[in-house]
Image 1 (cartoon, rainbow, N blue to C red):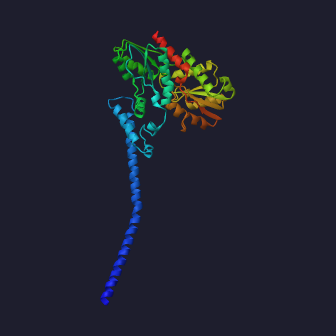
Image 2 (image 1 turned 135 degrees about the horizontal axis):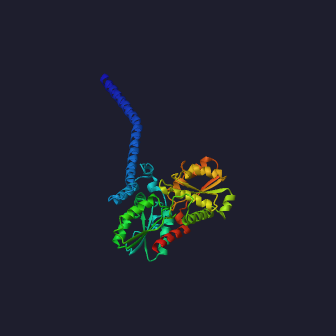
Image 3 (image 1 turned 90 degrees about the vertical axis):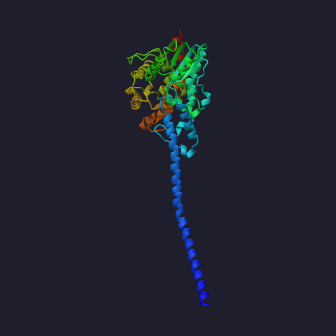
Length: 402
């Protein structure tokens, strides 16, 4: 009987021990779960950032001004890697020049643009050379519109395109699959097609740094093409006197002001002035000696009696066109309403971000932060959209063809 009791007691004790053991194991498992979950989450975040960093590195690799034999493959790789990211991973993309907007921003339908890079050129070519823009809709409305106007004006000539900014060419190619020639590609195409008479029409505003680079490249082809002539940029000759202006500057001053006044809903510039509204046209600015062009445009506005029109520049050169200097000038003149508009052929990154962006250092934000104005509005339209400006390019091309 005692043996049976002891056996039962041992069995009971063993069962209790097992229950306690199982309870302890269950408790240990519960305590380990949060740690495991945290570790898994951290690993997932690390993997997300690693994937985003890989794409950022691929974007930075094509955010360069030089085209190489690897450029096409690099553009394809960057887009493929971006497409493979989740939405959350895309938001983590950050590099020296890379950000989620490189592939993610919607700038319009690239399929509506014609890169004008076809062969079968013939003996006579008009090569329209632009800095370029990755903003698809505005590229069609500005550069594309100028090119079409030139083709219509000169039907016996083949109009082709070249951009000088390889960074922009790569961006468009990687994001949209559209290939635009740089100057070397366009000129090699001209040579291969047997072009004998080449007219180059720059869409640049002035004889500045970009224009100088165009001339340097053209110089290397003077023995490959029988005749190369270059038409004037939009604002014509620069000169070295801030008070000396030309008909081109007058035409552009009148055209952009008329369009700005119309878009703002006024019948005339005087009506805007009576309303207390000033127009500020924002150019790029340059450290090149051609920066005097902006002062000349200010002189032109004054000569036209446009008292409520002011000229500024993103780069703040010349000094009187820096944003705070412009703000002081507008305040001193007593205007309480401001309308900002780009003095650039295209309304691309500078117009959308440096001028009209929501960041605290944009022109819109800087004007608002000053606290002196009742309203600050933006017109995001490039000069190339204006028909009178397109006609001026045609006139410049015609002068060279004659």
